[in-house]
Image (tube, rainbow, N blue to C red; front, side, top):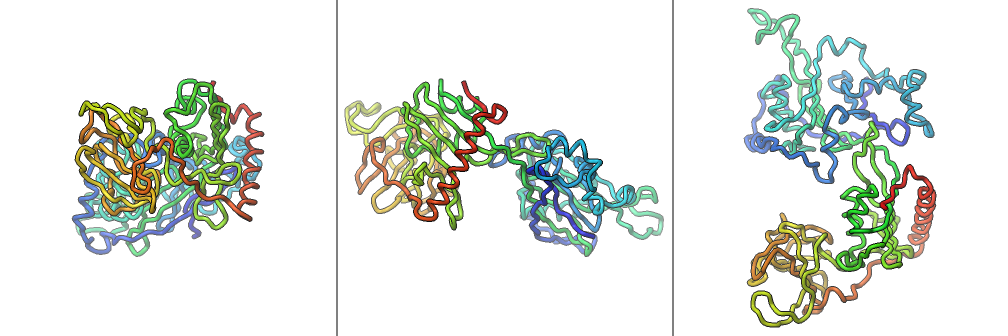
Length: 518
């Protein structure tokens, strides 16, 4: 029988998800399982009530209600196609054609070819020997405990969880996350006194056939029993429907509030700030009446709910009448996209101007009366007041020279960026995971958190830039620029920029797709 790993609705047509095969585990019914105490222990931590989304932010709302699996989870197991309960309606839909509206496709489904019916079992086939259930994660649950609650044996639950670990850490379960389980009849011979374990002909003994868990807005992990009795795991990656969105407005109080009011997510606003952080001082350069514009994609699930925001494709800031524009572009042959101004010059510089978001400049570079020592001395850095625990970013790519206690600096990090530039960060409350002397860091990576260690009167970041061994004023330093596109790469960028410009012009006249912050 043909196998389908996933079917999803995107861009007004039916697309196939990608499937990645995973490891296999021995079936407890075929031989005694090998217990791994470390593996069992690593899954033992229960859900502690964290309803925040996993990295990137996309799980919390999607795990509520029945909408998680809607539209994109069809799995094949043991030769039988198991259709998740939330998408039973999909198998009646025909193929979506480009240009068809979503409403027309849904309402006119009965007139379309049944592209999935040839893959479905007879209506009553599953009911005869299979039982499916959907479980919702509650406070105190572990994945292994939930699988047991669904009817699987302890050995089956342990082996299924071990297989899942190839793609998902069971300790990251979220409250309201759902797990879909299917049990099948074991078809075991009668025991001497009848069916084993108190089972009857009407209620035969069951064993775990397969289970599915959604691990992100576009990712599922499926574990299923193979014909040889072993369990195998695979990851299913779906494609979400993308909706271009233009958020623009005028800044009255601050950029973050205005952009959120215009419809940009918090993550999108943070990305916007980081894109312009090489040239813009967000503590001093932003004025009331300045303007912004952000073009990005919203990624929607089958229900039309916003699952997450895609990367910014265009952004502009108009500060004191001067407009700065950035375009997202992936140069031919480059593994990653970057941001360039209208002339094809990258937005990145050797160092970020501000290595912390949302902080207040509390003390600049130059002579000052020391708040603790009481006399005037040279202040060879810039202080940013911020709440304790605020993340601190590496101002540029480099290698950590020092990460530890350093006298009056308290917890201190110094990064060597090249032969001329170094940056230093003092009074940290703690270091980020993996930060140690000799470690490599990338620009924008969190290296530590704001604190008040050492000689300090309150939580703040003391930030220094060293140029050729001497501390210099980071606010007035002319930083070296990054790459500029040349030749065919520049031509390709200009073509991409023109398409974005045309899209912006079209969307500025479409009130449905454009949100303004007044």
